[in-house]
Length: 486
Image 1 (tube, one colour):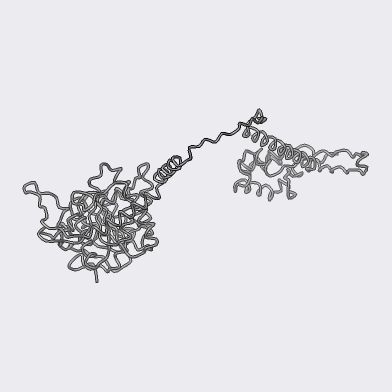
Image 2 (cartoon, helix red, strand yellow):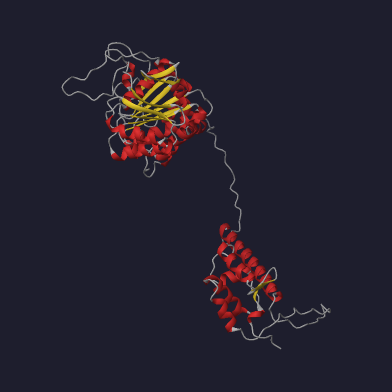
């Protein structure tokens, strides 16, 4: 079995789970070509569903001349729908499509607004993708006017819609989903989505921006010869003539799409003739679908919170009507309850503040203790007390130098960058006191003491012998001072 879309080209049936981009300018055969693909899939009993915002797909139900039956395709919505289509029914229809694999056209053309179309398509795409996670039988999704649902510039509020379709295109294959994106505006079709396709079918395209978008894809995946051959000829392709290209496979072919076997309902109406209405349409088993829809609607209503609340109200009313009419008199009991002046939440906030103050006080005490033991802090005098008769030794004083050696320091400044100069100046002013890393950063106007620039500057100062480090504290080197003090 194969999908013969042209006299000299047959796609393998595995194409049902591949992603196609079918691009062409207006009225050059996009929907016609997609309908030929759909005919081939019906012949091979490969299920599909088509999202149709333009009302152009219903003709699959009749023969090419309209005098005999076409294909057993369910049409929901539009002028020729077997059943109406509501904007809120996207998830419901997705359940039907997954549970009863067949051939479906979902016609949006009677929806009242673009917003309604996007609402239905978003709900459908999300549910379809999720449901196919557990039912992975192959199925193809045709998305006509795909740039509406996968736009390059996403209007506010449409991110969910784009995300749903992007999930189908990017990860649908593992769930048995293939996709054909149909668009006359390659330039406004989302590039993140377009880059995920497996097969490009490009018909005549004249617009410079659209040709540029196609050229970008070709240049990313094709050889120089393929680029020139496709791009140089695409503006001159005849009606129904197409390039079919699958990068990475042995498929790069210019073909003439075969004639449809079903009614061409996507043709431009001829103003000189009365529009042809098919005399016969293929029958479909609507009772099976109606039963499925009724079951799903009942389940949805049972799970609907509004419906559940309504049922609860009815039960409460019934219980109220069943209460005995005897009045039971009760004795009033007066109980005195002491109510605090402050409310519970106010008391809780006060307790949190008290806890925070206690924590701050404790941390402040720790800081004072650390400063008392820091190198460079003047030694505390030894003392004794009745409670602590043992003498507490004083912290030894650091070596103290005399005046800074300005000539030596100026000589070094000329070799330091701005950050190194600031850090050295901070340590010179603090001498003989030593500083922590955080203090050096703060006084040197660094916002992050863990930053690479900060560490680089500090390391260079240490390697140059300008800064001493004892594992915790930093201090300007005594070599920068003229003499030690007595």
